Length: 74
Image (cartoon, rainbow, N blue to C red):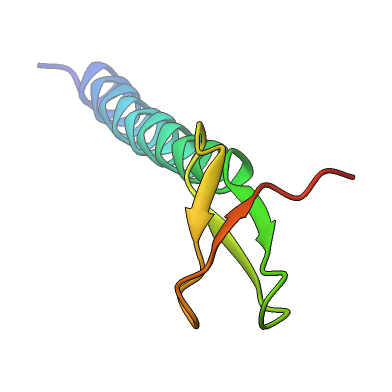
């Protein structure tokens, strides 16, 4: 194998490796951001605590006092 061809193959292999790592971390960070963005905020009317729950929850129990609250709407 010629030295130039070997160096080009090595550079392409390294480029592919770094592109693969870039795509992996980009997808992972995007999934984490979406999971955090889709949380719903609640305000307890009994103790005044602000807390979050997962998406789709219309009501959630307060982690401090256990009172069931509806979601906070802005």
